[in-house]
Image (tube, rainbow, N blue to C red):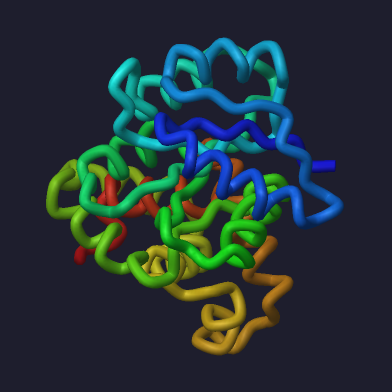
Length: 219
């Protein structure tokens, strides 16, 4: 059972998400609250697997809450799914840097929300497909890469790992990367697993952020 905590200052949004997530048997909404400080407290007491986190809330924003939850020293911290209207780009980028596993739009389809929760619970980060390229391009523009970062990254990764990471950061799926490089999808997954271990990334989204920060990819 996937345990979910809902965090949004609008009760109607929380109610809508609860109805959607309660429709499936493998997800349980274990709690909800309307601000960041309460989210930090409930994350510790309820131990959810996934937190659906709003960004801008009057009594404490989701960005600060994300940082506190993920830096709390817990051996197995929850996955944070940022829920945004996408007019708050700065917050989204900050949340990704803070370690959030991904984000979806508030008007996402019910099936997509369910899929997002399941993917994060399984350890797969995601970014809404409709905005992946825009987010990463804008992230790179606002966060200039360290000039020495690419050289350091190339020293850390093998040539094939670097190649796969670049394609991942360009928005390709494992299947697309496999077709591009004429290798099996399972081989792509194995390489990405080693990359994540080397760079200390929790998921694919954090791997993409790392690639932009270290200059492996340019928008």
